[in-house]
Image (cartoon, rainbow over all chains, first blue to last red; front, side, top):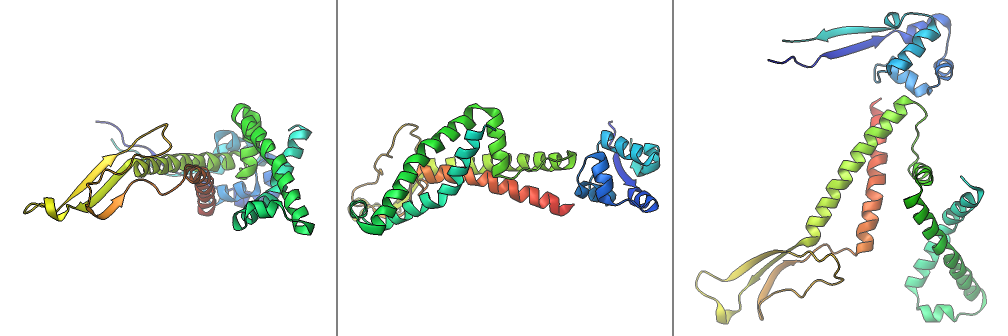
Length: 78
Length: 199
């Protein structure tokens, strides 16, 4: 009897953090060396960043990675 | 990229419309007459001819260099199909599109191979040899000749009435290769466009 694959739904609050600090997508993108389209995709949940990129975002906002990226639902069945 | 390579590539790209003009012009007219023309048209024909004469060895040089020098090949192919890998997301899209392109190209090549080796003939027997209940035949075969330029003559009975026959792809080898060259480019562009659109 094996385990079913774990399904993750990861959300983020990058858009809200940018709005709080008055930072444009372009500015954040340039700071962490990605394109503006990548920032947009991450905010919309269309693309999950790599661990390295997630850490860069956390360092930029001076927050813990788990304050920015959250797990919505975790499904694990035995 | 070396400056000389850059100049060669620019020549190959900008001279291509002239080469195509020459090819179309040459296919529409009589080559002997065209080469004997005088005046403006004659000069133009000669100029286009010299352009082709320079273009061909340069194209061969670039093709050979692409085969044997990886760095050069990567640079040219990336420019040709406009691969953008500015960050990890674009790298991911590129790899997914490349995977789709590779798999679909293999599928097309398998289809081409199958269609080029199979032969099918449906025919009726001649009146004189027909038996009750046996009016005709279906012949299915495989022709694979790796080095032969011509397929053997169809094996069909004398006086048979051919209803249908298929004896391989009605494409020249150059056309088939061109399709197998264009297909991965189109499928790559389509896949990366679709992935970008989803986002």
